[in-house]
Length: 547
Ligand SMILES: C[S@@+](CC[C@H](N)C(=O)[O-])C[C@H]1O[C@@H](n2cnc3c(N)ncnc32)[C@H](O)[C@@H]1O
Image 1: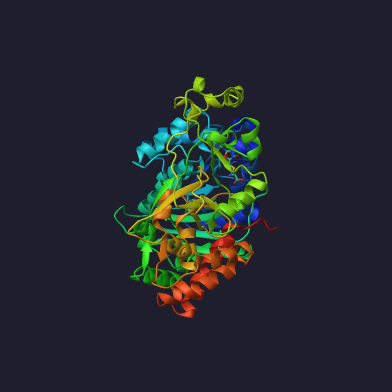
Image 2 (image 1 turned 90 degrees about the horizontal axis):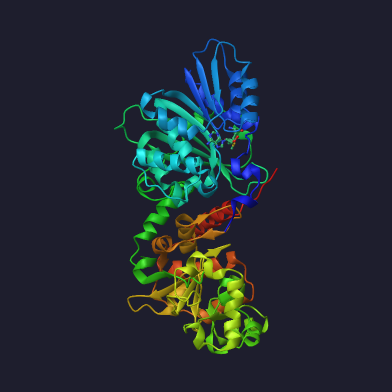
């Protein structure tokens, strides 16, 4: 859990400024249409305003620029920057853009162009009144709202709403626009409102101290509401050289993807080439390939509400006489290096002093021995009983929904997700999911078949990632992952051994593809295409800042 009081002022204001090269690339494109009016929500110290001043040619039609900046000192800097713009009325308001947009949607002060880099601020860090305004914006446009949203999302929704038909919006936005669930409403809104959506996806990270990747979003609002959206095009860029080119050349000629991408929940498919998409679609229809929810069920792990208290090492168990209440558990990737968690693995973890015990206390406090009561009191001294998950149950230390599943899957991974055959019948907590096979599918087969490039690529497309590059899947996303289940003999022990002895993730996948994907009829070339697509998306997710 992150707390507002521990965050830097930059993070609370979503204050990451655009450099002049990026700003002029976007500004040139918006100015091409000879706009009468431009909006800059969250203008900071006014880099886009300066870009307009530098790039505006005579004659031009620009009459007004309206900017918003919540921070007075920055707004003042932006005001100074616009003095260079003779004949253009510029108003920089020191106020919340979202509040202003709510009051003005229906006055129709539509803009011909929108430029900017909206603030990246988690919903929980926004002032209450801004939170309320953000929610109202979603409601006004009948968009599904969630408290997981981030300030940049309502900023872009409002900006699109304030664009006149045919107007252009060019913005720097977080790369999570492609996949995070909280931006799904925005993705739907963009495809409903805009004729084409172009995204430049840089290989490197552009902002200091920001783990979050950014992309450039260029879009034109539909002239007629009922026009079709041509789709989304994503252009990967290796370096900054494209910033010297004409953006419109890309906007006109890009290969826009629609169909599944517009109906689907995410835009990650846009990162694939058409050849990769064709192979993926063909293989999805293969009779030996299944959606994960056709072969297994996924449930969340045990929610303790205080993992440090409930998951403990053997030494804590003996110190407080907790033996009778201690059950085997695993919960981290370091605890299981392979695909099988058995007694041997468990005992090794115990010897290492890892928290291998889950405390399942069901009795009332006065039925427990003194040493166990002491342990409970220790938790109460740390105020664990007041935590939300703990205080809603009675007694607070009795964890509900405790059951073992024969297969586990860690929520997060670096390379590709893997299933774990839980032979030790250990419990797993909320760092892992509980999975059970359906339709009589053998456990070993499911765990074995999950390791291959097709499933790994599908996981990249369905999952989400945040700064830091770790891939995370929630149950509904795992259910949509595809898995090949050919009728072949398998050797899970051998594969488990390969994982444990440190065979590289790439080699593991290639070896598995040779068995599984070949057996469903995929040629060597097609297997290679799926592997390369996975590897590219994986590297993109794990990218680091490169000056
Ligand atoms: C990512 S910075 C971008 C600044 C500038 N547009 C640029 O590209 O360099 C976002 C700016 O939005 C401002 N901001 C944050 N919340 C705002 C709000 N509710 N209304 C207006 N501005 C806001 C921040 O103070 C910050 O200067």
